[in-house]
Image (tube, rainbow, N blue to C red; front, side, top):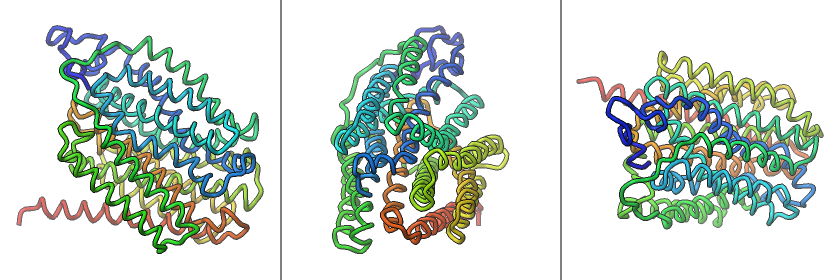
Length: 479
């Protein structure tokens, strides 16, 4: 963020905040209206992670895509989104949120049109990459505005609303994907972004005040962005291919090791650079580290169950996209209810208890279809898991962003959003490989393995969070 954005007194007398400045301690008279518009724009980005899920079987049939290509239809978007998110947060800090929000929206709209017009894998995936670029600019800029528009209790409330979009919006995306695919056709899961995006862009161009950046502009860390994006792409490529090559295959192990080396180089570059993409010390702070881990798990679990459920209902049972979308309606409701209840209980119960509870509920829900695979066990189990992941989205955002200083809001928002998208990429890649036999054939063994893997991952994550909290408590008690 710019110095003007950080100083409520810039352009106004002390004690008399400028009502036209969104960073004036929550005094902007249109802050809730702006939040609604920013939430609408963010909802598009979240929907595009899951709205494609219901359309995947139809896209694969129409364009002749393999399992790997279908997985990349999800991962190309989330990987670009997440990989460039830190750069988007940095650009926001340097240029100001309004310019970056509008630029990101414009790119996202044009890329959505391209993906909808796609008649080949190259054009479709190119559009998805373009959507990821636009989202990487828009999301951290929008979230930094939310953090700086509101103060104190209003900030927690606004972050709760924002987090509910992440969980509930993703679940609604599956339902919307079914409606659009069964109606006008799968290209409309992309076309729908065009009119919505144009309305949001025009309204935000009018309502958001100009806040030109002040002071020196350090260089953008393009090399850092390339390192983290390339490392993530190598990791996802290795995970997706593991479904065919095997998890212990030399190529799989080599790709994962290469990704680890890339991440290490990224961290070293960030510590040594004169204008780093991020301050790695921010990531190792306990609240930020915990929040990013939770957002990673929440998104990975969410994508896993949508991926598995979509192919289970449409490939194994032969249900239509509309029928499948309606079966996910309880999931959408449960996710939003979980997020809402968690937001209300956050202050009283504390984030750690709610995080452990959310992961435990998710693990219990995923265990149902892992033990008993059938239409209604899948619906009930995934809905229960949705309630748990909805809680995680709220806890993760509140934990990671609730205590950051105003001048760190842009980059902290970028970190949280980065791990959100990396979680989606990892969830799609691992699930696609674990369930490869069922995604490409008639057996249900892969679906069972997928749900078992997701349930174990949620249970292990709950134990890790609980153990970390217990260790903190013992350390804090004097001996």
